[in-house]
Length: 294
Length: 210
Ligand code: B1M
Ligand SMILES: [Zn+2]
Image (cartoon, rainbow over all chains, first blue to last red; front, side, top):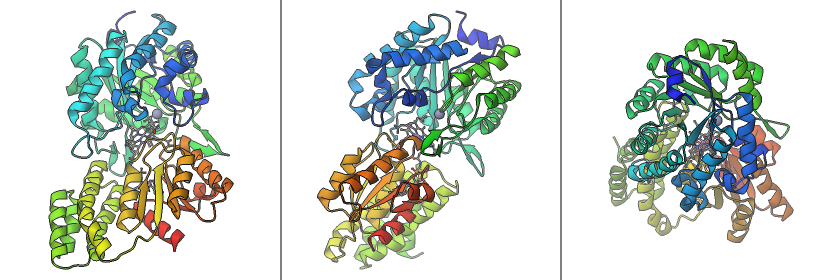
């Protein structure tokens, strides 16, 4: 396959995949169960989801490693299995996509709060990210995707850790913003402009946003990012925000809406488009339809 | 500025060492512990809560203020015992199973402690049985459940149902809170009360026990 960043540089629009977490819940993930351990416990579920996204048209398929940093795994007492879990997760996706799509190593926030606001030392988080990133890149991911970050300082650590262990691996880094009366900001108080600049300086190759919003706001966020940086952008929107209807948890934005909004994202100049919570292979198929028609 | 106002201001600025010193100063001046708490520490924390809701400040500032609140409260605790201020009730608190968000729950815990409740904090990812068993064993009047995930709101229902099943629903009250929870949802799942934020959680728990 042609290197990921070269395709972006040539102006091609690529598609990443949709939700994993909400698909795992539909596949039987129980509350309290570690989602990342499913690569060991239910590998067939993981490969089945990867296959569905590949068939829907994803050019990049994420590994089930969002919470597979040692910091996050420690919540389940699984810290020592960091290498095993990350490695297996990569192998499962690699085996499915077989060079038809990029394997994207997903990495979410540690869930630990750094000093002085919380108890964790910066070095502990950095070392933990290095450990996860080393395993993911050694196992052969094509891209690293650092996502759903809300503390820019932590996101920067994760980007730097990746570049330290594997300078040639492209890094996508996206954050989650809240809409406030004073504009978009993470709960930690990082604006879009500050985030774009900080991530770029840390060495990210692609920046943007995922989660926290449906397409309406995401288009606005994409526009702000476009004004803030010349780097390629990644946008992965939720299918709306979860609502409880008759005791069922539903995400209401349809694949059709995703298709409409994909036009807008392309007009803004977003380079990689995918989905987050509540999106399904149908949403990815809808994005694919629009991208192909361009 | 009065000493108590200074405590409130230092707390809002997240200056834990200053809050520690000023609290000790206030104690030395003979100001009753309850007054230091209400008009110093809690007054400051209320303002922080309000500013956070209005997006005037962000989470890091809230966390620093919470740390400062602890610094002051630790000095007051021995006095509460000495001044004979009894615990006004026991609350078992936790984030429900499947949910690892605990920042909001911790704030609720601090404020409840500040208000004079005995808090048994079970942490996060707490299974329904643990809520119920602990509350029964410890003789708690209230179970407080927090969740930030829409997908784990059904775990609150499970706790409430387990209480019913075991016949404790009339002696142990429940209060729920967290961003995806609303007054309406609380009513639908049969919770006894709902807390919009940490300050309102205190008022609601007082109502439940009162
Ligand atoms: C007992 O009575 C009461 C009474 C009142 C009560 C109460 C109990 N509990 C709370 N209250 C009330 O009083 C408190 C003080 O005023 C208030 O508490 P809150 O907790 O509401 O407010 C806190 C003071 C501040 N708020 C917070 O602390 C939450 C902030 C955000 C950014 C957030 C964080 C920090 C985290 N997250 Co997560 N996270 C988000 C949040 C997005 C956002 N902008 O809010 C949210 C909650 N997360 C979400 C998700 C989906 C997730 N998170 C996850 C993980 C994490 C971290 C671990 C990284 C981290 C938690 C760290 C920690 N130790 O808590 C994952 C789940 C892990 C798990 N199994 O739990 C993951 C699934 C993965 C992901 N996609 O990010 C979303 C939930 C969507 C939904 N409605 O279901 C989310 C809204 C982000 C988003 N915009 O999509 C009131 O609600
Ligand atoms: Zn999401």
